[in-house]
Image (tube, rainbow, N blue to C red; front, side, top):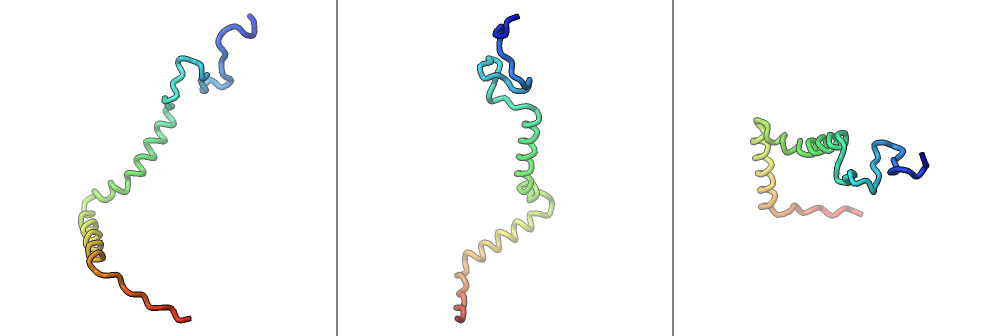
Length: 82
């Protein structure tokens, strides 16, 4: 069998050849998909935490504090003594 016979195969079986028609650049393996799901779940954790029972009161307190701060003029700072 000659050296150049057949399609070239990559050294690593997990790495597909660029010219292979079965190669899909948008496909991701199961490990990468799981990592993406974990990342997205962790990113949404803060938003889900506010939906837990009892967090409505905290949310209202935050809104009230922001509304109060928006109505009041900023406090004047004292000049530092040199």
